[in-house]
Length: 220
Image 1 (tube, helix red, strand yellow):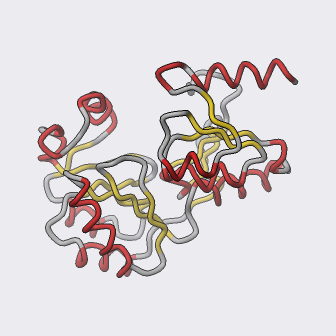
Image 2: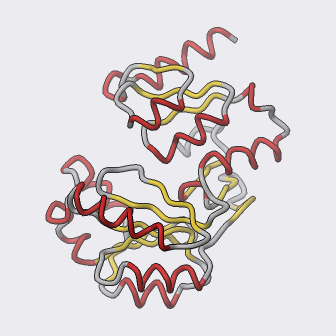
Image 3: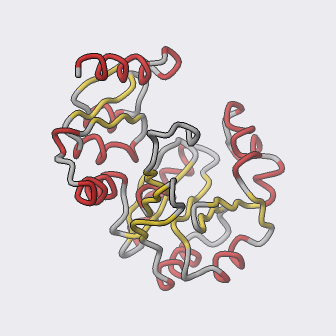
């Protein structure tokens, strides 16, 4: 996608940053506060983490070597292997980069485990908590979120919300769809995402986004 000239701006790490892909510069960045990172490590001691630094994800070494054992979908194994850098001491890594963490993910092997950990996130302060996958809890600075980032980008580019269309499939897309003038969820999106959408398009397996984008462009 980055080879397409028309794609210039990227909202990354659940809205923790906005990048200009042409100049390779950040237009906006919200990192987790050091005290939040320490609180997170204490609250979730013993859990397995992913951490994002300058948009690069780093993950627990054992998870990287055997992602299926930790609840990763077989469809995502190649994605994990090609995008993540393994780290054998994630708490140590997070403390060494404590001032520059875009966001942190907590691995959840089961839905029951996720529910337990989600309750624990209520102990954290000054954070934005969301999820894009049944196996993840994703934590960013309180100012983050795809909706907030899209709002900032719209202000920078002087584009009113009614001229924006946004697509999504996960809980972490819901606030973005709510902000956009036209929020579109794929049919197999999460319940929260579907509830935030103005329009439901065919599933990702049915190329719903591409079909709908072509219709939108043709109508204009």
